[in-house]
Amino acid sequence: MVKEIVKDQEILSKMCDDLTRKDMQVVRDLVDTIRSNEECACLAANQIGYTKRACAISINGRVLVMINPKCVGHSQDGIECEEGCLSLEGVQKVNRFRTITVKYTDEKWNTKTAQYRGFEAECIQHMFDHFEGILI
Ligand SMILES: [Zn+2]
Image (cartoon, rainbow, N blue to C red; front, top):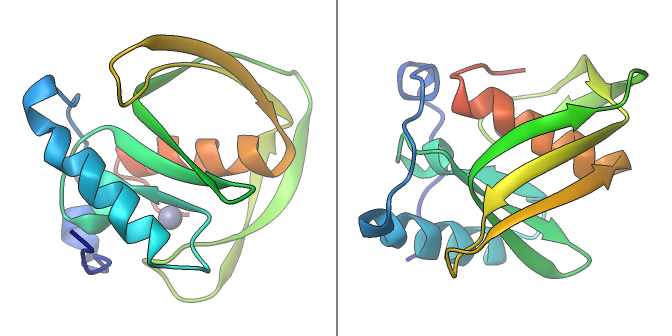
């Protein structure tokens, strides 16, 4: 189901819990909502009202789902980025690692580890902040 984007800071500032197999509706709603929103590069579950550690990232027209992702490594060097957020107005300057290695569960419940760089790495780090209840 396509959900409305949450802008309520109180909901967005809560720490998110791990997603379990019985929460798969969260994943379906994430995919439906990101597909319906062209300007949306990445979407965290708490932005559609579920305080769970799951997100969807749009990469070259494909939607990548990450369930309970964890950063298991990163480059030493960082980059300064200007980021916007669907839940906020305007853009902010933030520092991100250039590359990150992420361990996550996919929507078929397989465990995966992959390295990301550039804009994708930036999006995923933005998602990690959402899971901790941090807004840029
Ligand atoms: Zn955001």
